[in-house]
Image (tube, rainbow, N blue to C red; front, side):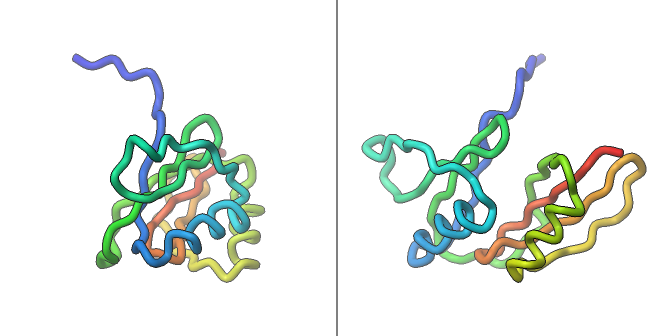
Length: 120
């Protein structure tokens, strides 16, 4: 058996030629804090950012078809988060209703799907 303590980070990929655009989206639109990445340890480019009590790692790979794979993050105010994303022309995806949760997903400009939810 494995005893898990917490999630540490999740990783999304963007096409190599759009890495700087991804940095701008995640720092300026989503408001995440860029943190030091030990670039000398990795053979490919990328960025690390703080997101709540875990990290988002952005890496590069050729563009892939859209998938239902996603990460879900709890937010304090799902309505405010949705409005902020809509105000920034970010694609919103409706999610099926799950009792006890208000939620939706968004697609970042690079095809990564992310769910935001608020427990009710």
